[in-house]
Length: 463
Ligand code: GLC
Image (tube, rainbow, N blue to C red):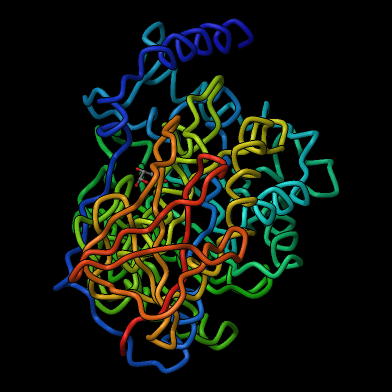
């Protein structure tokens, strides 16, 4: 096994070096997007309230942690036998052996440094306000102590640790810091025999049999899935968001309506994200690894990785703090929230390069958060690199001028529209800045001696 791990690891390390920029766009199965016309406003008042509260948070973290974190490879997908270039697999093994090796990682996953407290501190320091954690990814490996399977962290190498019910402790640590809490759960389960039945080969991501030929298998899978969702919604404290991935199984397939009806008794207003399924159980949409072209005035969230991968990989090429800040400004101006993908290490901590980048993002937010949190959109939402957000009073606007990596601040910043009345203030130091207007063109003089980072200004407009 040791040898196999080594081969796999060196294969992956090699891969790490060749994942090119272009691969970044295609890497990972990017879910088909729901469109604006697919959005259905909820009718449940409590869901609407919760969505409103969630839209104030703006910035969260999507933590992928699972078997794939042990060797540091693509999340789950390497056991899916689809002939596409973004699914890498150790070529020295047959598919059958590979799957065996992968599932066997259960006995290697021993996160002795598991420190959810540190995770929550790092994310709080970054200015994040909500968390979504992978309780179960497509590979079926549970990061919680499920009553319905032994294929979990609580029955592997970590079984004797008092914190073996990992998800419980993760949610607890973030709850203690006041985060909104989201439960990621994959509907498809590639370990469950009622989804990928051992009688047949497993040629793709879907169940590997015909539902009408094997209605009992399918029924068992549905019960298993419902039971696990019920268990998560019962034994793991309060939740704000249920984030369901794997859109090739729909909510209707598992009677999500029933699951939600029950869950909302314990978690009033629970936001359901049956992603890419469209309709009433997709309470917010989830554009993946990108930002919508235009402003969208209904609830949505861009999920974007900090490196190229969702889970931890060795020597990951992390994006810069400037990039994260600029992305946040654009997303918020367009009306969305930003959930940043971060993978804890196989030992169970957030690694230093992530901590450093996120700390810088937090430093910026501590000075400029007023332009981000609890804001709403304004019709003229950008001009070039300047993004506009609005205070809920509808009168106060913020202009966020974002810089690219290594870019110096210009002497002046110019935009069209959103003409200020009265004074304009630089949020970073609370001081007045000079500006002049030429028709609807506004030119702001950038004060001298500022650090080269994104700048946010506050001003009022005529209502
Ligand atoms: C994509 C990936 C999936 C990942 C998810 C996170 O759907 O295929 O593995 O968990 O994005 O947004």
